[in-house]
Amino acid sequence: MMQLRRPSPPSERPSSILTLDERVQPEPVVRAVKLSKRYRTGSVTVEALRAIDVQIEPGELVAIMGPSGCGKTTLLNCLAGLEGDFTGDIWINGASLRSLSDRARARLRARSTGYIFQTFNLLPTLNVVENVEMPLLITGTRGGEARKRALAILDAVGLSDRVAHRPSALSGGQHPRVAIARALVNRPAIVFADEPTGNLDSDSARQVMNLIQTLNAEQGQAFVIVTHSPEIAERARRIIRMQDGRIISDQRRQPEWVSLPHDAIDDIAAGE
Ligand code: ADP
Ligand code: MG
Image (cartoon, rainbow, N blue to C red):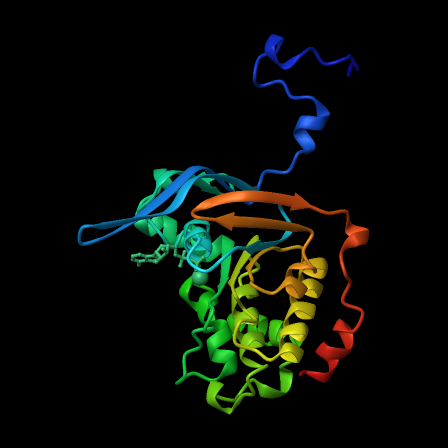
């Protein structure tokens, strides 16, 4: 029979016994402990990241801000498992990147993360749906299923009528939508975006953020977005500020203080 009793303090319990509170704590999607990264170019060494401790919880929408050169892209690349040469450790979905081979790390990355590059990196010789289904084909999803899922996510980002277009035939505001669809098609636990609105006019930037906010709310992926734009950061529930390779502040806000994308649904319907 189950008995309810008050949990004893952690120090008096064997580690295998958890209280209910401890059991419902979600595992962070990504965690870094004492993460440092240096670049050596000839005799010059740059300390790009200095003993960073950070964790991202499931479903969070996080903005990373800070002056150019402070280490934002390096942090994003490390947390996304794109960078093998660092000190400290990083866990993605509980798996330590230190303990994995390059191949296993690539597999974990493909399965659990999505990445929206600053220049979107769409393949020019492939059309929109072929670009989007690529991560699925790489991880072994069969062609028919990959196509079905790519079309579904393209529908969700409002690009159903552009699936056969090459990237060169798309408007500037449509490129990030394809990149977002490609990053999400594997249903990753976390999506990283490096200044996804940096090269867009303010209207397109607003629409991209509306889309990210809507997808974050509807599909539950965590998003970590590097941005210079206070309006973009305004949409995040958490803002991490960096300077000189360190996190200098990490603020969480109550949901009611976050601006909501009232016009997001209209944008998606319009496919703009
Ligand atoms: P941010 O994205 O905030 O502008 P980065 O992460 O790109 O900053 O760069 C952090 C620091 O590391 C900068 O001083 C930059 O010059 C340096 N750096 C970045 N990438 C390399 C590289 N591949 N080789 C040498 N130095 C680099
Ligand atoms: Mg950068």
